Image (cartoon, rainbow, N blue to C red):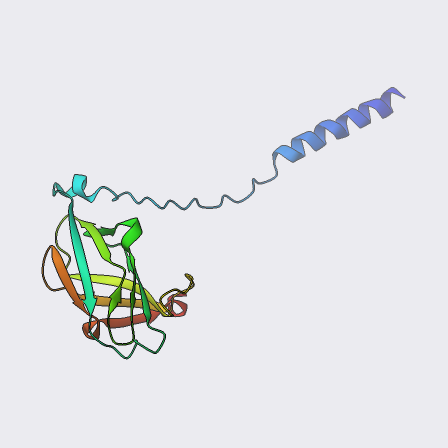
Length: 156
């Protein structure tokens, strides 16, 4: 009986040790929405300033529903949360406003885009548009001069 009890205790101890040597579950990388360069003003020594953008013009992307643009943050600017979505009517009239906080005037801005009616709910976008900017504090974007980049599916 003692041998049986000793065998049982050995198996329990071996089992506990075996559990300790099993490899840990893979660590899922943590995604942070705050990059190390969030405070561009601090790392550049340049002060934050507010900039307003107006979009106009026509493009073959402006179909009968209109065109929804979502500003994509990129140095030197961040979009203010309530003003990064604009809608362009088929005739190029802008609804909404683009307000950015930047450490200097942007030379280009990038947008995610999709075709949709003005009141349409947010949905997936097609890809990226990069647009030259003219002016400084109140800058202008001519949608006809924007360069269409890759569609999101091409980034895979």
